[in-house]
Image (cartoon, rainbow, N blue to C red):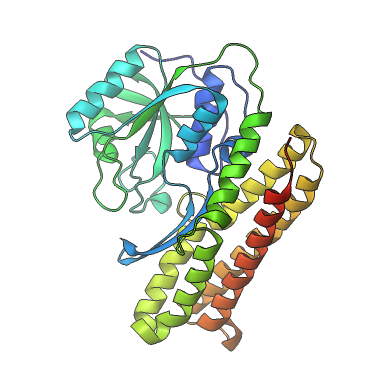
Length: 336
């Protein structure tokens, strides 16, 4: 059985790309920035008590699954999200849902994903893609970073749905169950997405998330060389840069996507001031890119004195200042 499914596009962010593909199947036309903005995917958290490759976890996006569930809630779409303790139960449930003619989003690890180019494979367990068919014990996949149709065998699919390590997906799958009839108005969902992101970036009191978390990240970077020595400090910095530039879309990439969302929201909501904020978001994204470039030189022992850990921490503080300014402006806008 194989659904008549159009792989809509390559996307920058796997989960919002999966959402675009799932909604496209139901003839709901939405692009990636709008899905990312409505789903409030923009986020920051630096969590030293959580480890990825033995280094503190730095998150630049909402946890996997939240963009999907928030998008569905804000659009009034019914949905299901499931995880499993047993690989066999996970595969049986996937087959059952596919047999009903429903495409399914899944979260997987990419290290053993056979259709991924070798250079893309890493121990990263938060990749999302859409399953839309099964024939001869082989599944048809729409993957946001691979053009066209992909195939994966039953056994390989079971393996990538149950990888070990941080953020193990445990067979996570999600799909839509109830689609509203008629034209969907994106205006109110866009407002809800903006307000949620404002709350998570400047209003949550926890010091490790949002703008407070960016400043906390800056303070941690300053301490790394003295606290851990250069070798471990370089490892932690390298993992932060990997999270920023390679894992998923990365922090700067998410900020460019959100800037595109704000530009579209300016027209959608008739709020031209969002155009200016969109440009400021691009400036913040470029500062994160500066951090990545200088940090990579530091890790490779090619840095100049102006690219020290203190200098890197100063860039992060500048990013925090820019993002706080952006979200303070967004909070002041009246969307009535």
